[in-house]
Amino acid sequence: MHTNPIRTPAPQPLRLLALLATLGMPLLSACGGSSEADTRPWNGLGTAASTAPLLDDDGAVMPSDPGVMPADAGAKTRAGRYASAAQADQLERALGESAIRTQVDGSFDAATNADMAVLTVYGLQAAHSLDHTAPVLVRGADLRLAAVVANRLQDNGFTRVFLVTP
Image (cartoon, rainbow, N blue to C red; front, side):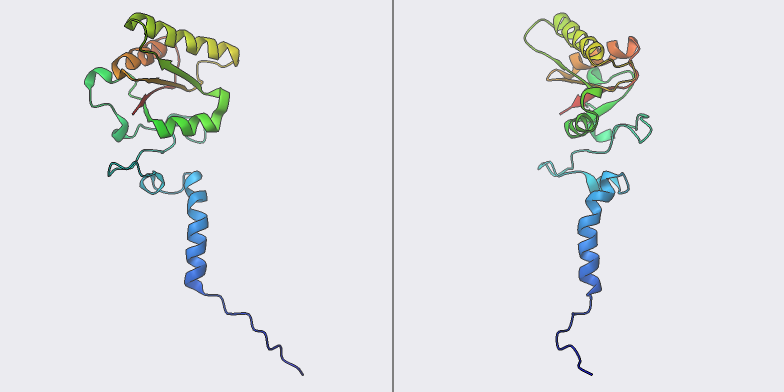
């Protein structure tokens, strides 16, 4: 009998584990199977920017990361739902037009800014045939004014309104 001179090297368990860990961790974290600290990208300031999901698999609101809560008490919302820019972007990518985005502009007086942001939400809600459970992401350079908009939307029946913090 002739033996084959070409040998396949024996698998190297440590290399295989390292390869599986490298390939599997992004998939695991995308499914929510990893801890939040493992899935948050570095923001360059010595802390991690939160990318924990805002909604669970059933669409229920997840608790806000305390790290994205505004330090200014005047910028806090009654519902206490906050999102980092990374979390908001992640939700928008996942839901597309089913997530409503509004921006509180700074080019008018505060009352007009708030009215325009609220009207934008109603317009997008109607345009995409969404109900009041559609997630709403409120952005603005003035977090106090953006919090006012978030509170108004919540008062008007929207149940998943998030203030996006920098």
